[in-house]
Length: 66
Image (tube, rainbow, N blue to C red; front, side, top):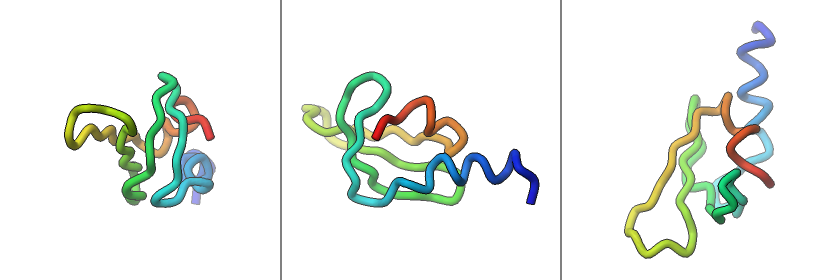
């Protein structure tokens, strides 16, 4: 496997379903689903129903803080 394909997987390896995180915007979110190429987050404390964001694994390091 090439390194450029390994890095996105390693960037998201610390996340698991149900984990609370802080997004780069400062909003709190919870990991809802870890997929093969993306991770689905649900924002917390929002008044909108089904307020989700799906982040590609290769962008997790820039969009999510622990």
